[in-house]
Structure formats: structure tokens, C-alpha cells
Length: 52
Image (tube, rainbow, N blue to C red; front, side):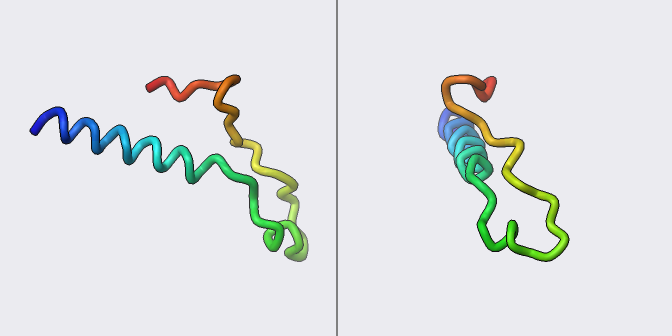
């Protein structure tokens, strides 16, 4: 069970990182008084590694 458990943890970790790594939606930029221009925590697969 140990290897399956750790594989599922890794898959969940990678899924979360994949969801985080996307631009902000355009409708958020259009909101009144919005100061967010882009996702500053965006990660490029070649420049920054996940440290997994």
C-alpha cells in the first residue's frame, strides 16, 4: 500500500501545481478597482522546477 499511497500523493501534488499554473481570467482584470495585471506566481517548466 505504501507505493500506491505515495504515488497518489505525488499525483495530487502535480495536479494542484498544474491548476495553479494558469493565467488569471479576463473578467477578474475587468473588475472595478482591480490592481492585478497578471499571475505573478506563474511557473515555467524549464526555468523553475518543483523540487519534487
